[in-house]
Length: 298
Image (cartoon, rainbow, N blue to C red; front, side):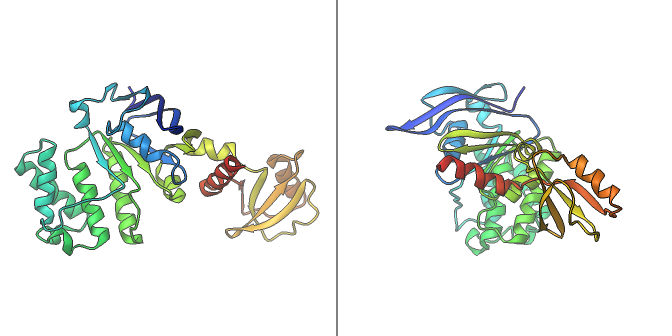
């Protein structure tokens, strides 16, 4: 059973399709990345998954069934638009939002203190929300999103505006949730975070699905015919190599269409060049993102 099944969902506003027949599924226990440029349809897709808005057509299932009041309580949702009651204390905020999901006060306080301790925020539990830094407030939002132990957690732009320390803290929290068997859907513009955290991804552009699969599959599909090498040897005159450029402390060898990585490796060895590192050159998700979105604009 999938955590989420989305089949041919369509949502149009006037003559414009914000989401145009998009289909995907999310496995239980994985971190799934939802990416795309501004206005691509990511947040509209999330709102349909949350039953905040209805699709014009198509079907969405959560944990094998259509969304209902019972299945909604299995979801923790961090919207892009944040909002906490500024005059309330941190602990009162946690207890209040937990109560909305049916968690009793004693359990909420216990879980809240445990989560605040892991986030190194326990000394701040009696402070008002308005006394916290923006980063602290965002971590509190994640805590109230997950305080009721949901099976599925949807995070819309979770790293927006966070400093490096709080970004790393949130990443650790996300990994811990996955290790406990939770399913996480994460929408973000930050490709490095998708590459670091996610098992699979979907890219939406202009309302349509344009990339879908594991991070490794997507990168392999768009890889160049090139290799990365670390050596102090002379690389001039290697047959099949059309260009050499520095790349993050290594050298990227671009190969012609008739040369495979195995062939160039054999030629390097035959020439007596000592090789400290040799691997296929894979584009980053950022490079793939720019290419796919750029091609769509043409």
